[in-house]
Amino acid sequence: MTVKAAYEFFSRLQKWLVIAYSIAVFLPITYPWVVLASGLVAWVLVSILARILRSRGELEKDAVEYPILDAPLTVPLIVFAVSVFISGFLQVDLIEAVRSVYTLRAMVVYFWVYHLIRGNLPLRAQILSGLFAMGTIAGAWGMIEQLLDIHPFTTYAYLQATGFTLHPMAYAGQMQITAMVAGAFLVSGAYRELVKPLDKLPVFALITLFNFLGVLFASERNAWLGVAAAVVVTAAFVSVRMLGSVIVCLALASVLAWNYVPVVQTRLVQVIENPLSDIGVRVRLEIWKNTIELWKTRPLFGYGVRNFPSQNFDIAEVPGQGDLKHAHSNYLHVLATLGISGFLTYTFLSMVALAHSLRNWYYGLEHRKLIDAGIGLAVFGSLISLMVAGLFEFNFGTGNVRLMQWFVLALMISNVELRPGAGAKSPGGEKAHDHDRESHGPPGAGGTELEVQS
Image (tube, rainbow, N blue to C red; front, side):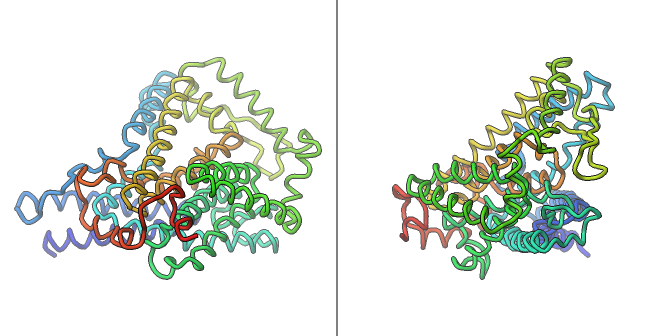
């Protein structure tokens, strides 16, 4: 095999691997890691082979030689990693600092996927089509699993659905992301950029429904709250009309779920009538109190991300799950492990991600790049959902959720690239949006495809 043939082979392999990842990410955590590791190896080989071919004059220089430096979240991720390193170093030693940074390894998926899509923007439609299709299957399975009390993949018969992740919290976090991404593509009309038959409204409406059903039957109360808050906030950034429609639909869905989905009352009645009688509430209040006391002892740099003191609660509902090594809250956990300095870098990372997603939403609409607008709104909604749920759960550190979250974030290109004539053009970038220019009129007051039609 020649160098050129090897380069072309591994380039094609990378594209298939990233599509495979969009499916494997819903499975037990070993599977996405196997695909990701394979993708990283292919990435390294392609980079080496490309350098050899360029040195021979057999390959043109990329328009953007180092696309990772162009990624919207590269700088805040580096800043956050530095704070993790410093915390580990100050609390223990250099080895601990390196091990602490290694805990962030799931975020490498962001750089791998961004590098791929930056050179091939149409690939995003294929990636998202795989994600939505598998999300539909996971949502449908979660509904069956919870309603029929079938748990073939877990040793403990949870009341809640666990999908294919083996744990309800991880499953709920993933379905929060895919539900908000699907919802954003539905209201923006960006679903029309997906592969057939997902580009048809009736088909995609059904896909969106099953992704939201996954959240419902995961039966995590923090996920319900997160999605409810996210759909309202996201709709507010679309239009007043969309906000009103979402509030009405949310109220109707809540009434139907309360009356016809037994697990909803099971999960909520006790909390409403007597919050302190609920084990989940009592454990959280206790661990939050302990976490605040821990933070007070090392307020500036915390204990280090690997050194959160284990706390045992014999009253845990799930046998063997009473030994907690997290604070049941993103914010308190980061505060205790990284201190004020790390909390500020975490906040910086979150705010930059939110700001870029909103800019992509508005720039995408303004310049008629529908899939970019849809991805921007999708990232914004999924982040809001996870951040609200993160008040009561450590989803930022949950492996399955983290692998999904940074995967989706990687699909959001720099908003600078959405402006005509700005930045370098990616191969196939213009073709990716031909359908937008033909079908999507100038954004008016309503701002979305569905509103233009209505």
